[in-house]
Amino acid sequence: MSKLKSTLKQKIEEHRPRTTRLLKEHGDVKIGDLTIGQAIGGARGVKCLVTDISYLDPMEGIRFRGKTIPETFAALPKVPGSDYPYVEGFWHFLLTGDIPTKEETLEIVKDFQARAEVPHYVFDVLRTLPRDTHPMTMFSTAILAMQRDSVFVKEYHKGIGKMDMWEPMYEDATTLMARLPRIAAYIYRMKYRGDTHIAPDPALDLGGNFASMMGIPHPYDDVARMYFILHSDHESGNVSAHTTHLVASALSDAFYSLSAGINGLAGPLHGLANEEVLRWTQNLMDRLGGKLPTEEELKAALWETLNSGQVVPGYGHAVLRKTDPRYMAQREFCLKHLADYPLFKLVSMIFEVCPPILKEHGKAKNPWPNVDAQSGVIQWYYGVTEYEFYTVLFGVGRALGVLANITWDRALGYPIERPKSVTTAMLEEWAGK
Ligand code: NMX
Ligand code: MLT
Image (cartoon, rainbow, N blue to C red; front, side):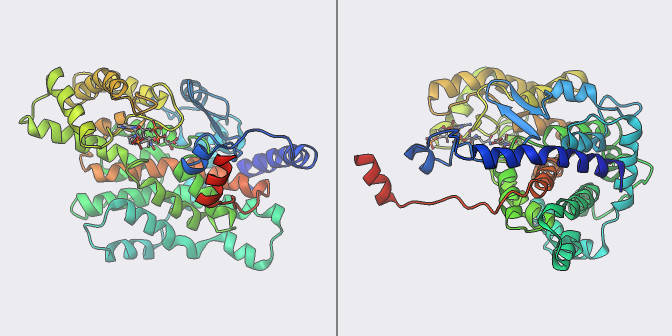
């Protein structure tokens, strides 16, 4: 058993009595009330999911395993010559809550490398899809195609016990994590680089190898590391995390579950917003003949979007009530590497101009930017101008969080998810009382 798996086993065994005790001795303790507004309104704020992997405070933003983004970046072992940590070390941190040593991290790098080969049939499947298929559809299809390799399914058919199910889930999750960067880079180069491919470099870490397979030099390897870590987890209620968890709760394997979660991430109100942000800013610049807008022109464009009943992509959030710290982390990168880049200047201008307009518009509860408002400009700067692809990058990152979560779901024996629905007439009756 690998060092990470044995650490995880120990953590799981230490944790299980806490969940058992809460259920047995305190299962009836109330942690909230439910309103009609919440039942109709997308369960906003309903506390009905449990995870220890990340927590989202509305005013502070995300903490991974108790650490803020700057604390996480500072604590994890860094790739030599890089400003950012190994994604593999972050995987250890998400799974166990422990910061790995450099040696432990390198062991995971090796484990990922050993699992990284993508079966050829996956590329065959991708190649049979019409080339203009959206890259998210390709990504989700490739994940689903690999379901035949699931260790979880094999063990399930052998009759594995409920409390042991986390082990094959961990195996599938790790294999998926090792393969996803190759699949993403393959889709990218097949669609947008004339179907020319760059073989994986077995000497590199996940971020370095991804940059190399994309064909983009340093510091794009750091962009990849930063991007995947920042997009990994946003507690459990967001659409991609919740979908992955929901599907896994039926004891569907990691391939089925992640593919479903990726389909949720593909929506414009969720991960696709990063594509929409670039589409919106590029359209604006095109309309102005490639020039940056003046403040007045930008205000007019924002009002035009709002008055036509559309959302301003990259702004607002279901939970956050301040600027997303993931936005700030990427802004910091931009200030260091592309401070004078015109598109970054426009993104910064929107950051100044948009929140007061959203406040005046009076609908969005949170007028501040989220992660998607800042991510596309970095990709554009390094030559990834095909913004359809941006959500795939989000998906590689999001896989870290949701796969760690479903491993823990099986470790703690979480049951099949099955909330109760009611009818409109019932709500009317309760409203009348
Ligand atoms: N522009 C215009 N209107 C907005 C915006 C926005 N950016 N954000 C929220 N609203 C509207 C929203 O459509 C709703 O209108 P209505 O009552 O007519 O249905 C009203 O404000 C109240 O919505 P909220 O309660 O503030 O937001 P909610 O929790 O429902 O939705 C988002 C959260 C993130 C879906 C929403 O803010 C949005 O659509 N933002 C733009 C898309 C986006 O950036 N999504 C990415 C989210 C992060 N991610 O990566 O997943
Ligand atoms: C996410 O990263 O999943 C988004 O910010 C959406 C959310 O948390 O609701």
